[in-house]
Image (cartoon, rainbow, N blue to C red; front, top):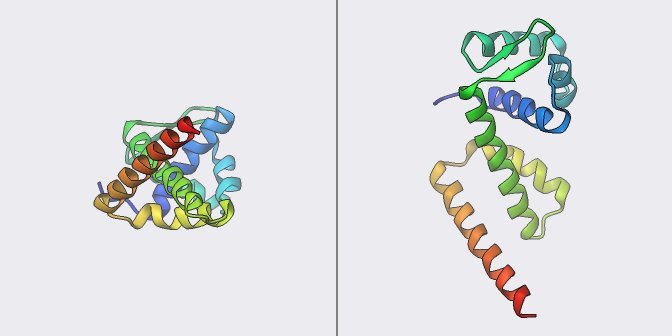
Length: 132
């Protein structure tokens, strides 16, 4: 599934906003991504046409399964990469910003290796804390 990085950002923003506030409208995406209303409007139209979202009569956005899948994949990458970078000693703010850049460009292979390493490290840390 090939989709542009900006489209991934839009879908991820919709997911994050939905988790944070329940209902999502285009204006919320404008504010979240600090974009213009016309650019978000064009993007939402394309997402509707391509089956990633639907909008009801009141303008509320719902992620459809293809959009949900992309949003979840990117958001999960973002959360894990942020956590991983913080564990390396990177500040929370820098880690989140760097994770946002990395989440789109890492190969699946590299991401899976980082994920496996993080899970092993987390397991070791938990085992250590249970013995102290």
